[in-house]
Length: 253
Figure 1 (cartoon, rainbow, N blue to C red):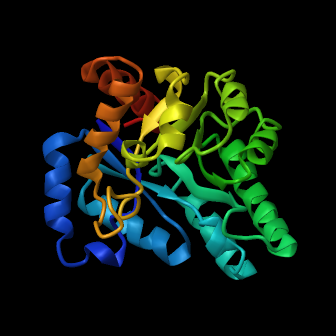
Figure 2 (cartoon, rainbow, N blue to C red; figure 1 turned 180 degrees about the vertical axis):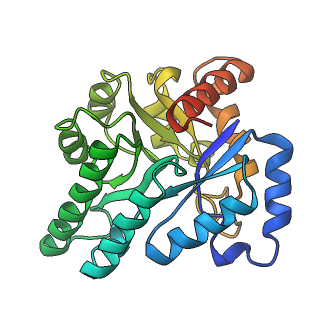
């Protein structure tokens, strides 16, 4: 099993990060940690170098943060991605968030910045790991304009069934589902008819735990795999095998 999206570089893990990683190593094959900004990306690279061959880096700029970033910070983030392109497994997380952000001008800035990361992924042929909330259709239309992005991942997919059907028409496009599956009826209904060949698993740790009081962690991705198996009436081993193979192919891990 692979947790394809988490943030164990965050300060929430400062006191017990080694224990969290140890628990992950006991049940998982690998973990992908996603940067959310310039400083965050640096921390992600440091963490992955410490746990080489188990934790893998993805560098990006979270859309809610990106709308407030300076031109210099964006330039430095692009530079870090280019300089580390042979070591990172994806560009992300990047995208647009229309759930939290309603202001039209800020949404437009998010879109413009997202476009720059799409172009980077296309130019350097790097997988694109996207945070696109309440704008999945718009993001899909944007990335479909580019032919050289090897893989596109809709992190924590929450879009419509209609958009999901369009996504699975592309062999190199994937939807990632988190531990939210264990309690979200919306996501449970959504994943019923999505082929395993288009599915990845994640936790988005420290978020999306089983309760609001809990802190999520990568080892909990096991719960997402079990829930997918239950919903799709498959055995856990089959879901594990296919989703893990998907992740290995995309991220080359």
